[in-house]
Length: 276
Image (cartoon, rainbow, N blue to C red):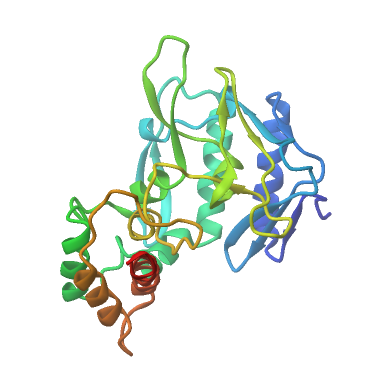
């Protein structure tokens, strides 16, 4: 039976998403009734007819997954849960299992190895060196695919009232795509709440990932070109280095992972030249 909140051609993906929604609701969370999670070729997005500014998601702390306390391994390009903490309760375990299974079903690790500039082993050395002229920390240190996946999707939040902040995955919230004018999550101590923001001009909801990164930094950290982000005011840019990135990433044999770098560098150059 199809789920009213899910649009996916993959029955496994649909089942995993439905299970996630059910568990969040059982934990006392809220998912706006008009929410629709869309899956296309392993890529996920969330749409809704909720009015701008009204609550879209409210995920209780009990439904957070403490990924840094879990030991993961890889079997080919599939994430494997190797060990969980002794205090991992039934709800956290079920949500952990569902989220790992979802990313495996969507082939996320393989997709990231192919498209993410910080992961692709085939990214040319001269392009890596060119990027480092603008962002010296590029690929230093190198991150493993699973850690990169969680780094792109997690928030640092305390799991207890007196505890230190730690990296946690917040189910469903991590499916919201980025836009600089997207919603800003609200952590109230017991739940993480996201209001509906529709900056794409469609029914797709977005989250502002924040951190005041410029387009090239967004490409390096998240692996995509962000047209909603501009240059960082007050920062000096080496325009010749940016143009070299564009040239190297524009060759006929440039890999797919080079394209976020090319588009981001081009965006910065255009903005710099428009201000000259």
